[in-house]
Image 1 (cartoon, rainbow, N blue to C red):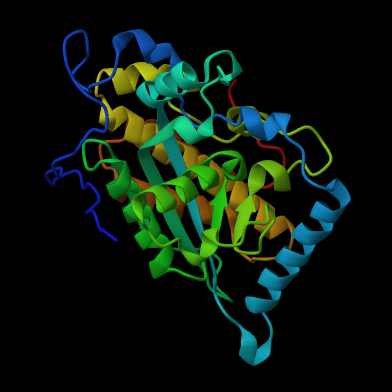
Image 2 (spheres, rainbow, N blue to C red):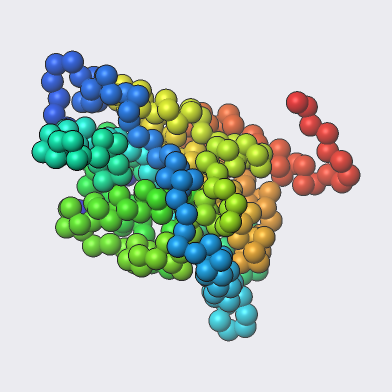
Length: 331
């Protein structure tokens, strides 16, 4: 498996290899300008449309998984840290191969460009370790990588390497079971890569993974990530999902990378709340936000979302936690 160095703000991006031809009528990123509105950005529509094999069974399995995680992180000589690896992918559509498929199959072809034609354009992840007796997590890794760093194989290889370095970390996503995980498995097969342990169990509620889109809703209607974030007062996406296509066409990988990191931060906050409310971790929720914000700032110092939105919000949460009584905030 080829390992690709992830980008640092002061470093130099590795030469990237586009899987799509470049030529006249295309932007510097090598994608058709006319297809900007069709570029996928990791939405959760399939998460909302699909339903699990058995809602009651799935609920029981989630509770069993959380109980197992709790037993591993507490209790006598068996006290162990609990690790989670929160990750997010951004995608582009492979129009060329989809067009070839439609041409070959004719009227019987599926016109919608489905997940198998979605190519990884960027990834971000954060590894958090929750130690028994500590009230804030330890951020062991926080990275972003995009097509100006590496091609699809290199991006996926870097994410797989992070998972393999942390084989006991629970892969945590929002809606990942509905596209991110299938795409990663497709990449492993296509490029001859070994799947990390988190992706080998094919059950949608495997102990090695948590899909918070499903875990937070259970029998209720599943939510989009921005929908859930706004409802619960968590900062979310610097740009609407539909705008990422234009950023990819322009080759604005910094912005695409920032969007992926923002999704990881939002999902990380939801993870803290979810695990704490189920008794799987014991942490100070507000101070934990400051630790996450600091790690994100180091991972991407130029991120305006981190600097102007997430970090100030985390400081406000810490300040509010020190006050007693009703806290009145300006609208």
